[in-house]
Image 1 (cartoon, rainbow, N blue to C red):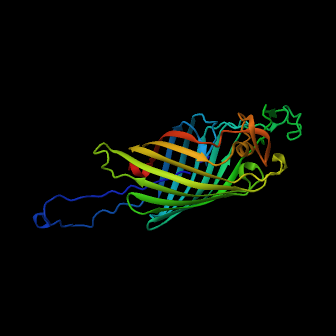
Image 2: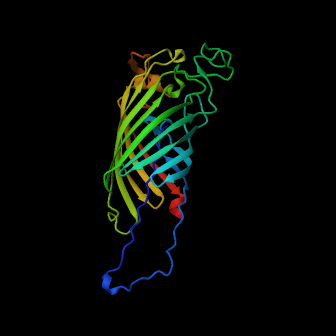
Image 3: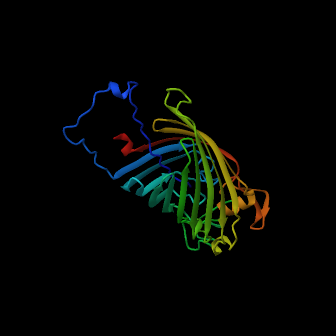
Amino acid sequence: MKKTILSVAALLAVGVGSASAADLPAKVYTKAPPIVAFDPWDIAFGAAVMSDYVFRGVTQSNHKPSVTAYFEPRYNVTKDLQLYVGTSFESISFANRAAAEVDIYGGIRPTFGAFAFDFGVWGYLYPGGSCVDTAAAGLGTLCAGDTNAISLVNGNVMKKDVSFYEGYAKVLWTINDSFALGGNEWYSPNFLNTGAWGNYASVTGKYTAPTTLFGASGVGMYVSGEYGRQWFGTTDAFYGNIKLADYNTWNVGVGFTYKVFTLDLRYSDTDLSQANCNAFTSDFTASANGSFSSINQTGVGSKWCGSTFIAKLSADVTLGALK
């Protein structure tokens, strides 16, 4: 999920010729130079296709390709203070057969020198799902009376609606033109509507290569990575009142940029066991492979939380940059 959306402001440098100041004619203004009006409004939008939609180390698309798009209006109160709202869409593959992930978010981005902050609330909506019970058509005990309920061969269960929200705080320190470090904190009182609270914290790093690396081609390159930890509370009775397993996740990758396009190639992984991954994800493809843990005594294990490679091609545009 999911998934975080970043914006980078472009710095334009205007140079002068090689002639000395004494050789240049003096420029005399007969009236004040024109003042460019400050336009506070901007809109960012984009789309991407990826080989795997991975959210905090866990696939949301059953390790299959996924598409995404977003739309984000922004209001710049000053050059150092931005308000924003946005929405995005991601194709997913969940056990409850939810149609898609639809995100609605909003917040504020203040900047203090080299430090850019971001505070807001992010809602994850999963419409079109069906209740997953131990028996179909309302014959189970969890979705009693729901004739649209479905069941899985591996015995996993999942609520019809797993929508939830998180509050977040982020900071990005731009050290110079090449290096940036970040920190992120996300909290939900009811992660994936499991009844368990969720807390995620991570650190990020990015190196941006000099623009001259590929000559005058206009191609840029960066290397970036993230290391994070996800903590959980205890689920409600639907999921057996279990304490979901905390886990670490990490990713590292290289990206290539050209105009509005970015090709990102990334490796992602977690330290979740297949047994604990199954308890967390309700993976409909999980199989009985001898995976056991204190919260999963079924022997069913999931590969949704293991190492994976992600290739993502995206296009991102801001209207302000086009003016």
